[in-house]
Image 1 (cartoon, rainbow, N blue to C red):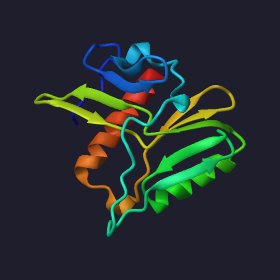
Image 2 (spheres, rainbow, N blue to C red):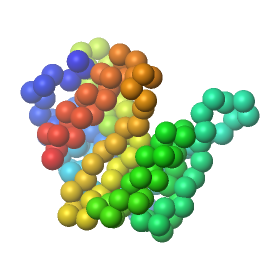
Image 3 (cartoon, rainbow, N blue to C red):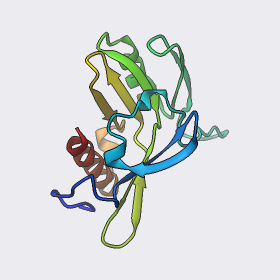
Amino acid sequence: MAVPAGVDPRLPCVELSYVDGVHGRRRRPLRDCVTGRFEDVAPVRTFRWSRGERHFPGWYWAATTGRHVGFESWLERDRLLMMDFDPKVVGIGSRPFWLHWHDSERERRHAPDYFVRRVDGSAVVVDVRADERIEPKDAEVFEVTRLLCAQAG
């Protein structure tokens, strides 16, 4: 695994970068971002459309947020619909941030698919991928994301 199980997210090697509506692009240590409202930030990367592509990107008007939320596949769109209809969800942001960490060889990064705010104030970071399409390198990234989010609370 790229990040050992005991890694402390307060270390400077674990950072988030995101697009703040006031300050623009920002990159900060994870420990400084745990209370961030990532359901309100702009996506960190664009949703690309190309003729002949096998994926299905688009924008979904979410009643929960009162604005468009991006998706890159039918599966992401379906999960987005489920989140929008969930009464426990009060906020949804797509591609809310890049999570940066350093493995033993190089800097790595990952942009989760969604950041979801629940009615009780808690948050969930969501990656959407069909189980049969998760490659070993993706499983590693998802596990690092899970670990860091769990440690951040």
